[in-house]
Image 1: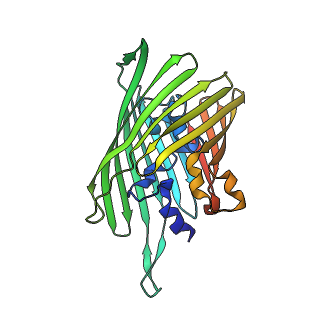
Image 2 (image 1 turned 120 degrees about the vertical axis):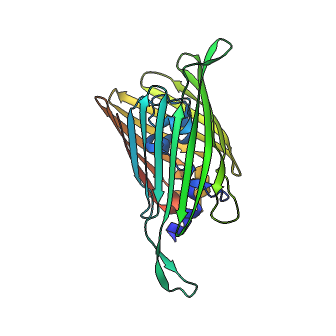
Amino acid sequence: MKLLLLLLTIGLSKNDFGYNFVLLPFGADGAVFKTSVISDSISPSVSFYNPSFLSNSTVSSFASSYLVGTGYGGVTYRPTENLQFGALFFTTGSMDKIDSEGVKVGTYSSNYIEIFARYVPEKTLSFMEHKIYIGVGGKLLYQNIDDRNSLAVALDAGGHFMPVKRVTFAFALTNLGYEIKPFEETRYYPPVTVSAGMSFKASDKLNLLVSTGFEADYGLIADLGVDFSPIKIFSVRAGYSLKGKDLNTGGTWDVINGLSLGVKFKVRKIRFAYSVVPMGELGITHFVGVSF
């Protein structure tokens, strides 16, 4: 039952676009900050949410014990200053196939893959004497359930600028796509998301993140994040996502739905991150990330 509920709520979208897995949090940073990470220039997850940023990491990866035996993970690679590639996968593993009489007749699996690329040109735009950095990206989306599969392509775009020192504004449009090969006759489209956010580096130890936006057929989204580094090699994080309310069931622990916590360690050029995200009756998800 939990697995069925998970599949129905992948991405916590109110309706099924067929590609809601692209809304899952990417990386240990994305798990805590969600879309508010679009203005965090040093996050290894930032390019997934905003193509105008390419993280400082050459390679980053993450894995998650997502829920009820499912597998989820991703990786990014930055070969040049202006280019970055990445991928994510989500798989339910083997599940029993039951006929109309409730008899097991075999097994099947459900798998989802996204491959994406980001490009940031050296040329910048300007507005009121401020440089605006822009970036674009493309992605290939594949999914299969049992013997059926589908394929789609999508475009992403984003930008950011710093009006004053320590403040960064960012904006992004993601998942603007088209389904090339549908499962059946009905054609679905990736869930377009428009978001805007701001980061305020209050001090060398404290960074505040906020974003809001609109998700197709869902409505308003909003995310908050706090990153505090008491010492240079260690930081603690906390986040809140408005979409967490969709997990409310009237239980005692509903109050923590939408909250997330994490820590990050830095050892020379290697960064380790861990995040935990409560998801109501679905359980708790854990994310581990490594970047260098």
